[in-house]
Amino acid sequence: MTSEYKKPLPRPTINPEVSQPFWEGTKKHELWLQYCLNHNGHFFYPREVCPVCLAPQERLVWQQVPAKGRVHSYTTVYQPALPAFAEEAPFIHALIELDAGARIVGNVVGLSREEVEGNALELNQPVEAVFEDVTDEWTLVKWQRVDG
Ligand SMILES: [Zn+2]
Image (cartoon, rainbow, N blue to C red):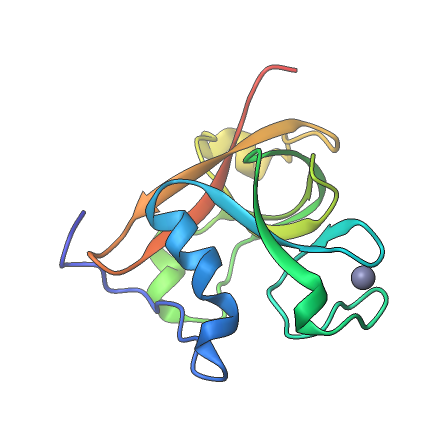
């Protein structure tokens, strides 16, 4: 953990209580998703209404899910939109298909610069979450390859 973290942090300012269980989970190094009791499926990002069947909040519950998935798609970022991320470039920003069924975006870490620049990350590559405690308040979710 560091107080020197200089990059932008999440700012859940619109109805922050909606995503609070997700961020409480990341602080415990756990992945929590909303589950819809109407259509029996997880979804991400946190919402007040199910994006699949429009079930209201009373029909949504939070569940811890395995912090594992597969790379659905990715892009290599050479020129980040925000200067704060310039020193990390190039890096991989990926769409992860979670084993629980929902999709989540995040950076894939643990790759060499040669692997990043060579597009060595395979689609369908199994990945697991890496929880980075960037400040005392915030833990971010990133992803790393696992054998599969
Ligand atoms: Zn639903």
